[in-house]
Length: 532
Image: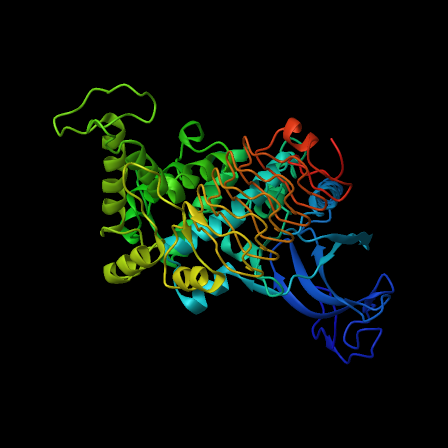
């Protein structure tokens, strides 16, 4: 079908072979190459269409955004033209990110403005919630882990989106990744000093953002980077409740969104959301990185507690010792060292958050199974000697992971074939992986602190947000690996092959990368390709 983009057309649907609209005579082939097939959405300031580019082989789909001002006065047309050009400039600047639509073309015809963008096949989060119901807390955390690095990238390009909401987030069918669309409301699209009040309204109604998702300072035309943080927070509330902000009450005294009674989340996550949704910009998170740091602590709380307990275990004299100092430290009324008390506090906090004795992300195996696992695989020694690391084969590791176990700290997992394995969020602190094959594996947010990964094959693996503090990666094959926002502090990267790896936002120094192998295809922490 050929669809007419003339807003006044009485019958926009035409046969697919027509080049001129039968109802109004408008040319159907835009710029002699784009044939519109259907309307995707329409508002007071423009419309969006699905089209095919007939000038390219295969006639690929694209999205055409038509900007049509409500008024044709010279001032409004000039402001619309500026809005159009700025959106095109913004998309051209940031559209090389894999989770943003690419700008393909833009042009002006008969006082109407057109942007041509990459077509993203998928479903919006708004539709996803309508179809499948609210997200769980874990689902929203996963959403944040996908979206916040993208927001961080956008802000690093000096861009404020100003319209983050479920309807502007598409889950791409191809790889299930989130894609953020609609940059028509980016900062400074409208200069309120240029036109009269009525003309301002015509433009700001389009460019200001969406009421309920936009914070007060944005509605007052004074957006800051933290304005997007507020919108992400409201989006989280929608995902948890399936209620849009207009369906929730506001505190008449403070103006705060009253959402707490509609969600059931852990105390820690509720506090993170609360800070995202602060009406006062000063008290809100200032960046996406601040939220990521607040949420990143959780996957490591349990292993931190275990490490503290191990370090405070009695030695030959029978007295507990601090992991900081070999001297005995002051004890509280319970007789525990400060370190042991810290470990106990972390464990108790985890119990309060989950309402159980176990972390549900780490273990759903029964106590009998756990005992069997420990007794059959652990070789303990006596006389104060160190415990020999547990040895597992590939099948055992994947079986226990599939049953819910996540903690594989201090294990010998060398020379295993774990290609394409899914081991996201697993804890491998101080484990041994010499020459293990992790090609194409999903190791998202895995903890490799102090692990031995010498000559390990991690090619094309998903290591986004993985933790490698003090890990030995000497000679490891990391070609094409996704190391975005990974923690590589103090890791040994000597002779590690990072050609084609994505290090966007990774915590790694120039000195570390100087001893590794990188090439023009390596994406550095700054987001740029090539060498330092």
